[in-house]
Length: 64
Image (cartoon, rainbow, N blue to C red; front, side, top):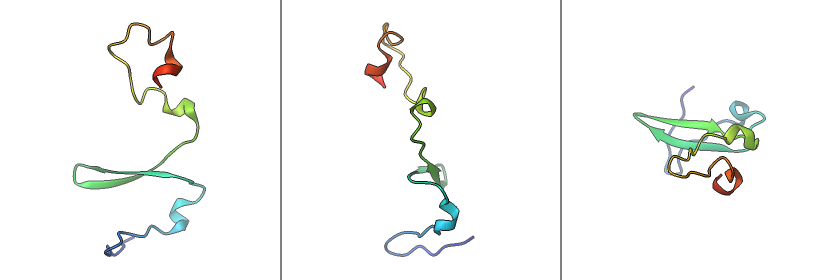
């Protein structure tokens, strides 16, 4: 599929986003990624690892 870039951006047809409520748009290397965002907090674990805190496992909810 090709889409024209207008002064407002690019329109992604709804049929490509079936069942998706929110997306993250990010630029990586020479491309643009549109990635579904999950509401499930379990799937977000490990996205922001803690490296300099000794009590991270005890106070996990505080750092998430």
